[in-house]
Length: 268
Image (cartoon, rainbow, N blue to C red; front, side):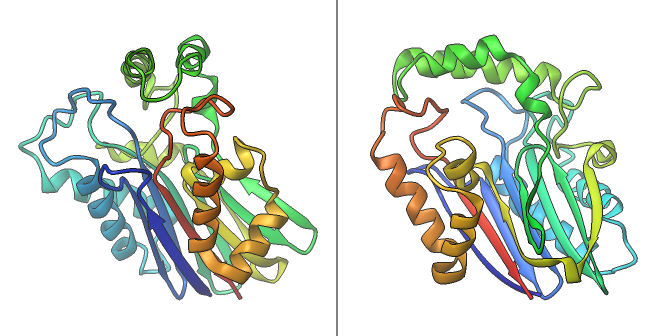
């Protein structure tokens, strides 16, 4: 498996996405925004995704370790790195997770929250994603969408949304992300497909996938054509060019003018 990777911040703030690739593993993490609210942790989201990613790569180096088992082990490992922080805080640093691993003649996948894995198969494209968060708090999301980005109203509406989301995060009636507890791994979407059925695969944070999912300015066949010719960097550059035409979020209401973006592109 040949893996090309790239990640870029969406603005001046530190990048909260993380991506890695090895000859048999690809990982994309998308750290969740804190909207300036307290997290109970002195380290921050970039520290969290960096350490969760490195723990994942180490845990999944053994092909006998399941993806859910590796994620649970990684979550425990990161928690052990900062026991002095309040890991029970509902806003503790957290992230979406997308993992693809080649295990002999199979591709195992794991998705936790809305960073999709897209497979280019001989029968067409298939998207593996976890959209449970989309069903949560639609009224508050609509309120965010009413405001242009970088306005006081937008900032307040986003803080209200993130604060309310924290009450539903990692609960049976809400949605699940990687945070402090290993139990989140059991709520991930997992599966396997034969390698011979797949021509290429892409793991994307929503800051890259939005070109298709939110902006509708491209299709998955077009995204894969871009990845084949220009790689992940060209795809992210394309997203930035599209966002630059709507810097205040009038055409495409969103949480940020530009979100952090990460891509891992896998070929065989």
